[in-house]
Image 1 (cartoon, rainbow, N blue to C red):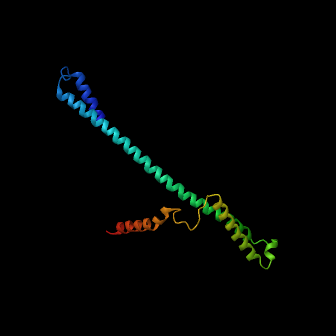
Image 2 (cartoon, rainbow, N blue to C red):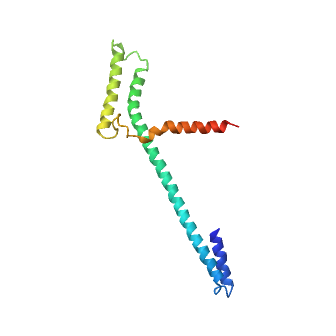
Image 3 (cartoon, helix red, strand yellow):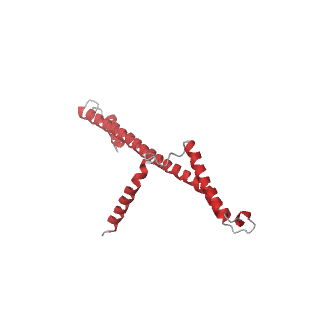
Length: 157
């Protein structure tokens, strides 16, 4: 809109012979130019804010994805072992042992402990008792409560 106003004022100045000498016309051109400059600045600031918001949202999503990746690294091998021993084959010699169930549970538990130690020593997984690891997780009950309050407000007529 301001760009069209500026173009209209410039066209008026070109067609009018004495408008270049008129102080009101000069003032109008200056005001339109300054408003156009301010609008461009606000547009740039809005673009920067949108980019910042998207960056923060992306960072939170990446943190959450790293937590889910570590969780899947624990459960995928355990699920594989449970799937293999849940196939009901008769020619599996381990199933004939008297303590085969407890041996399988022990292997699964030791595998989980091994994965935890491996991730902890490489710095991928922090200590489980560190409260500053994922500070945004403590906000989850608050966000859930806030969403449920919004739902209850929508249901009222």
